[in-house]
Length: 311
Image 1 (spheres, rainbow, N blue to C red):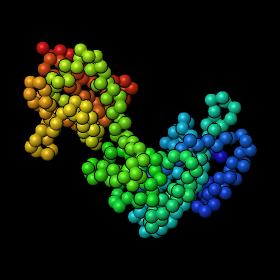
Image 2 (image 1 turned 45 degrees about the horizontal axis):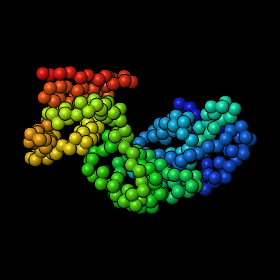
Image 3 (image 1 turned 30 degrees about the vertical axis):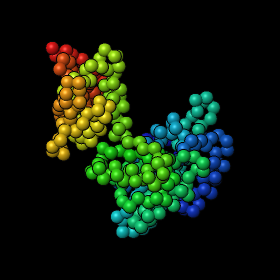
Image 4 (image 1 turned 60 degrees about the vertical axis):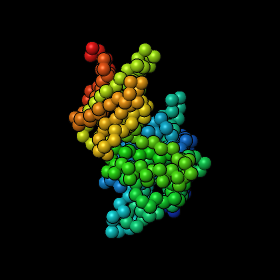
């Protein structure tokens, strides 16, 4: 039985209809030395060349802490030939007690041509019963959505950073959620990138004596890496929502905002600057009397935080 490795091993090739039988033979051969564990079904779908190897390496790392049945799918809908290939393997890690290896199953599929249309059937047939289904969708969402697939998904993982049309994609995500009767939990990796930055920004204003600065913000500046403008826009949207900023009327592409204060409407200028480095390398809020700045230096594990008086 193959252990988790940095390089991709396809595992044991099997006929799709014989997967469960071959898995049973695999575990029977382990003779109690290895224990199968699974807390969730994790289906990973990609159409990128080489994705089977890349996603296998990711699953190997994930299963060190999160046991699951992984269903890794590499699809090529544009292929002229229609075919499906399948492999079984396992990622095994020594338990913390050190007495036994804990193993997570991986079922790998290569779908080509018209076989890609059987994606829901393939996923459903391989689910570990009674366990939630997490679907990591690494492609653009496409209409029409398959209600058969989305009705079974408990959590969908995606990355809006690569979306070419954010509004259209978001509408499809919401449609998928509707198909599942709002049971699906949405997990945007692009949003998750902002967790530590959002916490750092919020901590500037934890103490009540700093709250007055929130009504005095007049400018927001964000530096983002090439290709990560959408990440910066998510941060702008979060701040606008938390601080009750309203989009300024006028050009739809404008990033100007206003906030109603006791002294009347206050204008907030927003500037996004592309700069090589981390997805978000800097964020600065400027008020009438102070500057609040957070920097994430390239490759650094920690954020640098700055506060300064301007008057």
